[in-house]
Amino acid sequence: MAVLGPGSLTTYWRFQRGVAKAQLAAWLPAAGRRLLIDISGPSALAATQAAARGHTVVRVLPAVRAEGDGAHAALSAVTTGRAAHRAHRRPGGAAWTGPPPGRITPVVAEPGSLAFLADGCADGVIAEDGALSRHLVSEDLAAEIARVLRPGGELLACVDSLVLGMAILAEQHHWAQLTDVPHAEVVLVPWPDGTITRCFGAGQLNDLLTEAGLEVAWIRPRTILSPSMVDHVLGREPGALARLVKAELSAGQDRLAGASPDESFGISLVAAARKPTRS
Image (cartoon, rainbow, N blue to C red):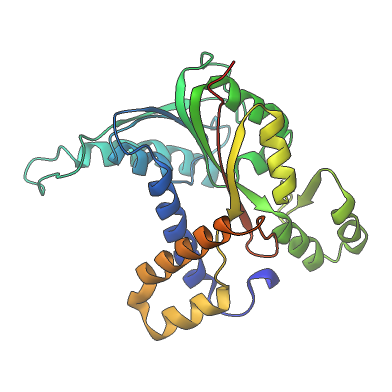
């Protein structure tokens, strides 16, 4: 993809996954067992990570309507979560020194609908892997997230950015649509495989969450370090991934301490928000 520039995408995706894991670790509640709702989809590993920290996770998965890769991904998501939970109890394994492992409860439900959950039941919602971008009427899903959160409950969300959307449009030579992007209130972008994603700028994402009744703590690009830099460093020193992730998190914090989020970086935006405690 042109927006990522030259180099190995495999290397950059390793870095992206490392950053996402570190950002989730920083967001997860540090103490106590909390009830978290994970709507990230079958490909994300957020539920496993949260359960390993001792939390109870309700993992919402799409219904399996056909055989093939989609069905395999959904079934793998269920078995992966259960296997991770059992691994901490496996006889003869290494002693578990972290918090008592939590539990992952898979629930098959229509994507974008949390109607099976009661109002104010959740301590947190994880919407990683572009969950709000895949649900094109994102306002409905954002309102559902706000509904199920208890007062003080928190959201971590990742969406596709306008940078990604414009790159996809340019690669498909959709020049007329590309020129409309800066003025559009809603940006829907078709992928070559026929799926559609909703892309957000920082202001649009802020408005989406605020209008749903949430208080936005921060919005920033998932990654600021360029793909070419990541590819160069890891090509010379493959063991430097942890240091690169630490540098990325530090750069993100520095940017948060400065001015408004810069939309010229990254193919994804990450946001943290909370439901107000006041009525």
